[in-house]
Amino acid sequence: MEATAYFDKFADEQFAKDSAGALGGLLAAELIATGIGGMTVPGIGYTIPRNSGIDQAVGGASVIVGSEAAPIKGRMKRHAQVGGAIAIGHGIAERFGVVDQLNTAVAGAAGGN
Image: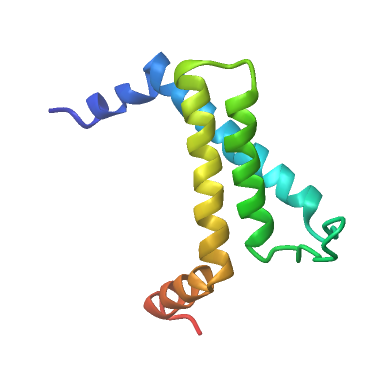
């Protein structure tokens, strides 16, 4: 099979819609995380640290719940929620230092410090 035949996926309209839904959910979660980072939770007094992973997890959870309440249906709702779940996973990885460990491993494998 020709190598160019594998690029047909990028021209698939449904693939583009699914990808846009998931990317939209992820970007919405990141936008929420940026907005709540550094804020103090009323009544509790807990400050959500910026770039701690907690802000991303809250942003992702907000997208998942918000998509459930929004007037969107079907695949678009599901893919937006998948984007929110990816944000939660990234937040958890950041919180527990997985991101830093991966960056160190990649730098070491590439011959960096």
